[in-house]
Image (cartoon, rainbow, N blue to C red; front, side):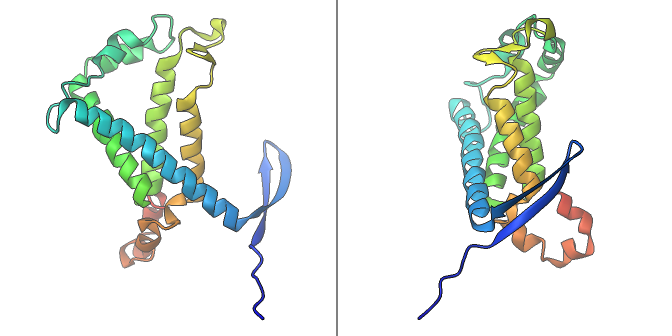
Length: 195
């Protein structure tokens, strides 16, 4: 009679903000949750990029433009509005970076390739969107469309940070293979982009 294997459990010991914390977790459930979050975020980025691409076509995303958001979508009371006014002067660069960035970030998350780099770039894009969402400043409580401070872009940024920290690209991803290659073995600094 075969015995069932018990899911592996580990313990995390960490120092968070000067407080020692310790907890057990299941490696199996952690792997499923990381893979699930990775695939969901891949879908979010791919869907956003491909919908922008389909609006205007392969070479001319004429149906989609960042101009409306940069020039009229950021509230004047937003403390970062001048940053977005500056970005509006570079639409020729910003628009392809957003469109193709979302597509390539989505593909990298989906296939787990250069995962940490893609997660960092996705988190950066989400943080910029988050900065643009404020309808007022600190004295107003940093209001956003449906509350204060926190919106989905901040949640996506934090999730991407967490998945990058855990190295979710190694879970059924290309990064697990790339990390075993001679190039990465001889240049361990490349691991900062993988995982």
